[in-house]
Length: 333
Image 1 (cartoon, rainbow, N blue to C red):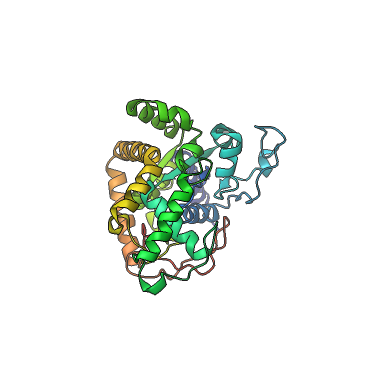
Image 2: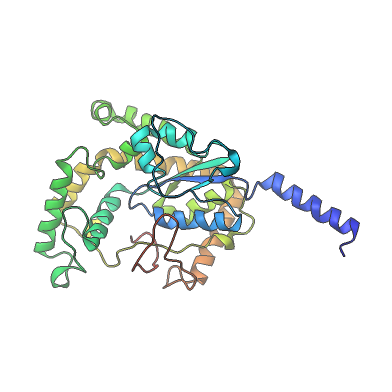
C-alpha cells in the first residue's frame, strides 16, 4: 500500500510535470512533403504518439463538400497525429494551407514542416521513383551497367528534368511554393527580397520548421516544442525510404545541374529562409537545446544510426508501409 504522504508527493510531481512540460498533451500535424525525410520524421512523431496513446489520423483524404469543415465534431473522437501525405499535403493543395493549419486537429496541436535543399530533394525524388517505376519511368533495380553516372543514365535523367520543367502543374515543379499556397506567378514577378518575405511569412505559421540536413536539431526542436525534452533517448530514430549509392548533385555534369537549378530556383528561396528561421528558433532555446542535440547525436551513434542498421528499426508506419527499404543514415535518401 502506498502511504498517503508518498502518494501525495507522487501526485504533485506528476501534476507539476504535466503542467510545466505539457509532455503528451499536444498532438502533431506534419505537413508531409515528398522526399524531404518526411517518413523518418513521421516515424518519430508516431513513436511519440505511441508513448502517449495519441490517436493517429487515417490516411484517407477528408471528404469535405466545401472547405473548411472540421474533421470531427466531437473532441473525444478527434485524431491528434497527422503524418500522411493524404491528410496533410493533399489537404493543403486542395483546400489551402489554412485548412491544414486551422481546421485539422485545431485543439492543442503543434504544426510541423520539414524542408530539404530542393536540389537534393529533386534528385531523391527521381532516383526513388526510378526504382519504384513511378510516373513515366520504367522500373530499374539499379544503374544500368553498374554506373549511375553513365551517359545512358544521364540522358534519362536529363529527359526526366525536361519533362518536369515543361509541366507547371507537376508536383515537383515549385514543390514548396504549392504546398505553402504561394502564388507562383507573383513569385516570378516579385523581387528576391519580396519573395523572401513572403516565404518567411508562410513558414512562421508553423510551430516547428525543420531542416532535413539538420535532422537531429529538428527532432530536438520538436521535443522541446512538445515539452518532452527531458529524455532524449526516446527520440532516437531510423532513416527510412533511402536509395543508397545514388549520385549527389556535385557529381553530376554541369548541364544536368543547370537544369535542376532552373526547376528549383523558387524553392531554393523557401529552403534558405526555412534554414534561417530554424536556426534562429534553435538559438532562442538556449543551452538546453545544444545539450540535447549532443545527447541525441550520441544516442544515434550508439544505436548504429551512422554506422549501420538499427536493431529496432520499424519499416512500417501509419503513413505508409515501407516494403523493402533498409534503415540507413540521413540525409542520403
